[in-house]
Each structure stands twice: as structure tokens, then as C-alpha cells.
Length: 252
Image (tube, rainbow, N blue to C red; front, side, top):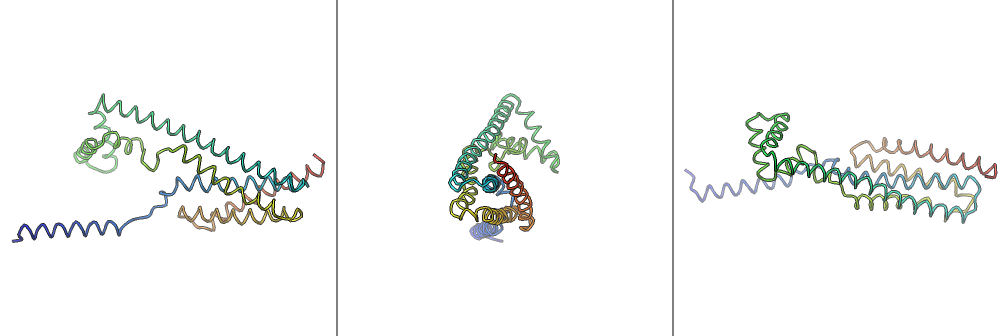
């Protein structure tokens, strides 16, 4: 028979082995990056394309170099603040909704704890547990953190999904400005005769990179993400250039 010290040593080694296996087996899931990816990539893409499209339209209308740069700087500032305000309002509304739902859930837990236990049990039964085990799991989780259990399993509110208005606003503003600065610099540094072709080249190359990076981070083929943004980017730049040329030719 195994003595108690030997048994304790075996248990300790088993625990260490399980901990080591846990550290080695860490799965990387693409959805973990969705929050920052959405704000950063969409903001940079919007800043790059909207500013470049505006500048190509203005450049095609034969506006002077100084006015072109001023237009780009104004577009960068206005777009960054607009993105920040829009994202803050949107995510704040989401945060308000989450807080209201948590308040309702907390009130129900105080008033009808047994019904809330039954509700959580039914959720686990639908996920594949038998009823007795589902009730045990629900009871233990509610004993540990009743509101957190219902927030996660009934409402779908996790740490990853938590609304953060200030972070979202800051990320959107910075990423928009980071994207918009490139067409502004192209307009400021290029000779006036080369502004239009340079804006096209810089914008489309950067759009392709952004699309590829976003696709890579999301687990999709990089070429697919690049082609998507290249198609819409080319269409946008061509449309604003045509409009600017027509209006400029008419002296508007």
C-alpha cells in the first residue's frame, strides 16, 4: 500500500503536471481580437479612404496646393472627432442597456431566487446537461456569484463583451487620424502635378495592407480582405475624382 507521504507527493506531482499541461495548451481564438480590431481597423480604413476620396475630388477640381492641404487637415480633425463622438454615444447606449439589464437581473435574484435558479437550470439543460446535474451546476454557480452567472449565461454579458465608451471613442479617433494622416502628407509633400496619382497609389496600397491585416487577424485569407477594400476604395476614389473634375471644369 502507498503511504500517506508518498500519496501526497504523487498528488502534488499530478497537480504540477496538470498545471504545466494547462499552460502549454493555450488556444488562440480569433474572436478574442474582435473588439480592438473593429475599432482600430475600421477607424483607420475610414480615415484613409474618406480623407483620400475628399482630397482626390478637390485635387481633380484644380484647387491650389495650400487649399488642398487645409482641406485635408480639416477632414482629419473633423473625422477624428466625429468618429470619437459617434463611437462614444453608441457604446454608451450599449453600456446603459447592459447596466439596466443587470439591475433587472439583480432585482429578480432578490425577489425570486428559486425561479432564477430554475431559469439557469433550464439554460444548462438546453446545452446538454441532464436536469439533476444542471440544477447542481446552477446552484453552485449561483452560490459563488449569482449575478455574474446570470449575466454570463442568461444575458450573454462577458468581460470581453463589456461596453467601454471611452476606450472605444479614443481608439476610433486615433485610428481614424492614423489612417487620414497619409493622404494629408501625400497632398502636402508631393508636387501639385503628382498629387492625384500619388493619392491613388498611397491610398490603394495602404487599403490593401489594412484589408490583409484585418483578414489575417480574423482568421480569413489575406488576399480576400485586400481585394474587398481595394474594390470599394478604387470605386470611391474614381467617383470623387470624376465629380471633382466635372465640377472644376464648370467653375463651381
